Image (cartoon, rainbow, N blue to C red):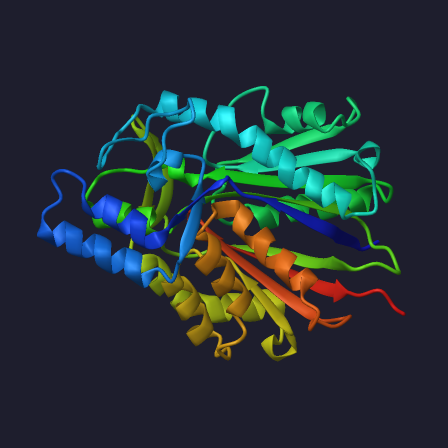
Length: 365
């Protein structure tokens, strides 16, 4: 029994801000010397991002909407972790629900058919959590099984889809709702440390959801063929996500794209088989340099990572939700044909590589 992604829904906060405006805001922080300002300019300009979305209107220069105070004039404030997490609790549920409703609406199933919920997030935590709230907000059956994958980072969408596929394999009547929402902008840091500047230059807010069930003939979908996970020999200290007193703190050193560049060819060949047989790529855009390293190491042509680069350009790195945006675009692409083989790769703290093989299905006329 093959599990398939029947549909994908996405949601974004209302506030969209230009990358150049965020660059100027971060460069203007008190205490940033000329070297720090140059680092900000270089990191933000090299990110290959045009716009990002945020749940914090103040980052775009608008008035706060009754939530977390993000700035005072040009100065970014540094609220305690509890206040940031309160804002996550206030704003994340609506994004989870919007993305999930979109996925269900496109799936050919109604909410009553959902048997399992898998939620994903690493940018906030509370209980009862987003899995519980989706049952309530979408009026799902109170007997729906619920699972939450927390603090796995950018790679978490693939483990969530793997869990959904395992559930469907065990129960052919299962309909699994997978939903990921990340509010990365809640955890900005005003530090001039290069790791924090790089993190500030790429991370953004967004949500995505997928409905996974047994593959059906006669409708479009992405069959989930196989999965694999791999932990590299190095990188444990180069990509990390920890809880600090003033928000969650990202470590993202320049070694991350280098490690991926060195390791990805052997990992991809082991996990995905003959790369020449891959028709489309969905690679998590942790940053432009990561995509560049993957493209070079796998000897891909410039068009191969275009879907990943486009999501990065328009939305930035939305952590775990990002890969589902890319798969959404591949599923909707009229140039993609029935039977196209899709390779998905994502990278998380550890340094961990998650991979999936998918097959695109189109209705047969």
